[in-house]
Length: 187
Image (cartoon, rainbow, N blue to C red):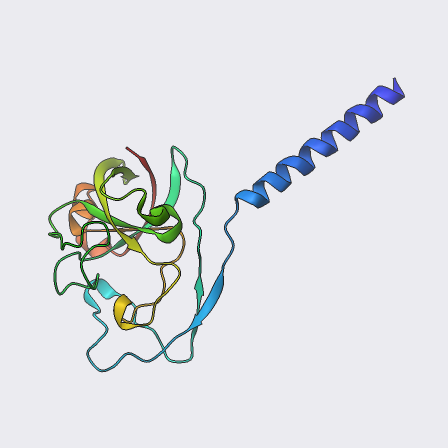
């Protein structure tokens, strides 16, 4: 009996160690830091309360994002994909600008996955509602604080950066637009 208990306890310890190792392998750790630079005057578009890089501040970068599941947790942020908007240049997926009235998103680098989700739909859930949105861009988690990134810091690794149409479809009052905890999945 004692031998069976010890064997069972050893087996349990091995299972716990294996699942802990598996969880660590799935985790996403920072890949580095970049030093912030002061944007040239008038070069950081702060539409939608976007942050501008601060000289001397270190910003964390990521090459990965948390694992995608049927209900991937993320933070919804707001972005203009229109020409002259705070999104900077045209979208990575199609080299076009998109109306703020169209439900489109940019995903953090890991979820963007080298463009594998380009022009595909995702389903966003929050506020008791769902909306389908098209992936048109990357919210770069590896770079920032330069002209190509509108002098904004790198995105965190858990961002779904969405047009105003997404926020409206989720029924979020305009005064509350900015950041919202959501879940999302591939459509």
